[in-house]
Amino acid sequence: MKPCIWERLAGAKLVDGKIVLITGAAAGIGRACALMFASQGARLAIVDLQEEGLKEVCQEIQGKGDQALPIVADISRQRDIDHILGGVTDVYGGLDILINNAGGGLATDFLAITLEEWNRIINLNLTSVFLLSQRAAEIFRKRGGGVIVNLSSQAGRSVSPTAGVHYTASKAGVLGLTRHMARILAKDHIRVNAVCPGIINSERLMKRLEERGTREEIIKTVPLGRIGDVDEVAACCLFLASDLAGYVTGAALDANGGSLMI
Image (tube, rainbow, N blue to C red; front, top):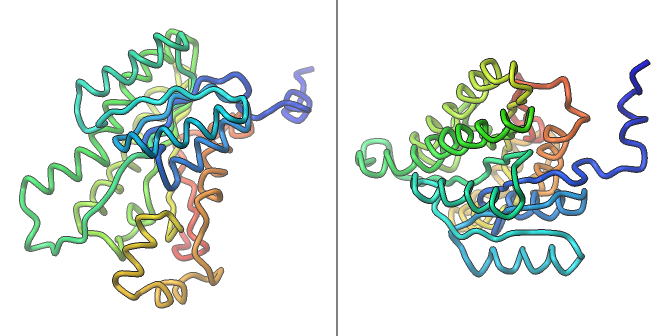
């Protein structure tokens, strides 16, 4: 009889020995993911444009005796994506899990968005996910399987209360991309899922709410009555990346305190 999942995981860390690539890891949700995955036995490659922040996260992980490879790169550029995947495979010999976390938005009014700005946000939030996932899937196939977790947003389910229409469109696109990749990559034992955070206490979002003076107003719209923590989103990513979610693919996990119930 096949051992149950609890027997297989008893006493083990959830991603022990797995090679994990996390983008946007210098701060916020990405940093929380890096620290949490490292604590669960992952061998990390962490990516960000912010070199100093990336260095600090890497030092914190290594200070606890865990492995982390810092890669300073711009995920919106094809050549940087090639550099990222090449660096990971050169150092670790492969890849098991990809966390597509990096992204961002602008609050530009709809009528003021230029084509250049539109393309910049779409490339950052959606095209980069496609390109990284495509390259990762090639590696996963050779290794007999893998996992992709994409960070979408509550905006992808509805609309963004803090960013512009290009952010909402890109995050909705991530959900469509997630479903389609999950369908076509399942035969290769590659699972693909998404996480949709609501209002979370990342540094960037908290600064935006403070500048607008809308923090308390936003909290009133959340049924759980509080802003979410980056660790709570990281825990969702860890679950989907681990064998606990071995039969989950093509799903989008909401982490929004009940703000959007579907």
